Amino acid sequence: MCGRIANTLPSDAMARLFQAQPANDLPLVPNYNICPTNPVHVVRAGPGGRTLLAMRWGFLPQWYKTETDGPLLINARAETLADKPAFRAACRQRRCLIPATGFYEWTRPGGDVRLPWYIHRRDGAPIAFAGIWQDWGPEGARQPTCAIVTTAANNHLGKLHHRMPLILEPDDWPLWLGEAGHGAARLMQPGAEDVLDYHRVDPAVNSNRATGPELIEPFDG
Image (cartoon, rainbow, N blue to C red; front, side, top):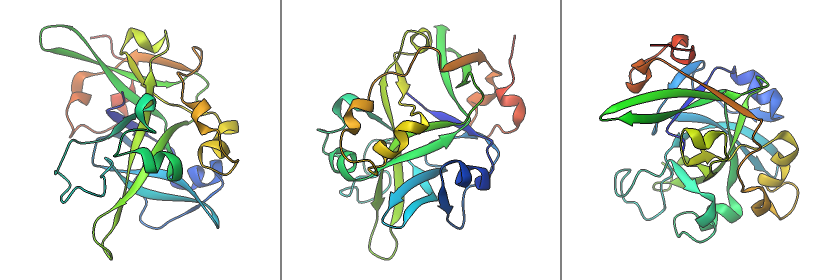
């Protein structure tokens, strides 16, 4: 799964990387502790090209009457994406990319102890999570919302958790965004074993209020 994100890439750099037109009011970066319901950067394709815009991290199906009318849908399982009522239309028509520089996962060695780990690309490049999006709310006040697609973990990430986010390489971005025809389903599989690495970080990140670059630094305590 994916429950927290870090993003240190400037918005203009994201726009260049994804060849997207940036919208106004993008989330502030760097942000080392992006939590569910926070706004995130999202790349979306359209008739006029790609757009980089802000979306609420937490997908809201059309039938939710309020933001808390059902479960908080921050992740969407690849195995059921095309069939689950909340996601199936978005799976076909509203796929997106969610940029980040890393994400957090937790292990539980025993009792109530939760040990956080920071996961990032070994090559230092930004991460592009596969996502889906949905506009939610009444006409005139609709807000875009999104979820990160997850798969079963590969062997490397499986040491931390049995799920992992679906991470796409640049050559696959057009297919996922619907710019290169059909066949995006073939992308929904665990990533290669040599793409990601991880290290322990300070338990301070367990707090939603924690901020600062020290949250992603290696921690030996």
